[in-house]
Image 1 (cartoon, rainbow, N blue to C red):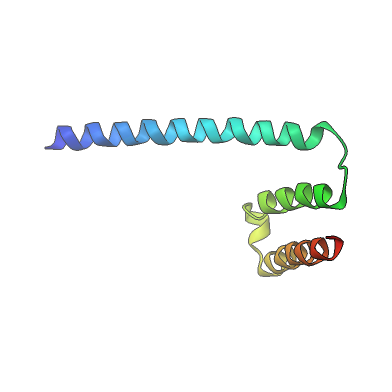
Image 2: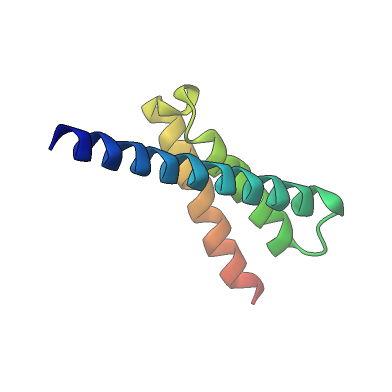
Length: 86
């Protein structure tokens, strides 16, 4: 039974490792695409800024409640302003 659990744990760890590798590759591809050319519209610029804000939101510096509120406020502004452009 212990050997079976150890085998299952190794299999799950291998899956997680592979998923993390694939995610890193997709993020690299996304970042290359986002930085490949200037934004063609305010929507594109807001999408880039949203990506960066969401990335920053995962850092310890962004866990401060005032920063979390500011990030949420800016993302809400992007959504509201994008609707006014449509």
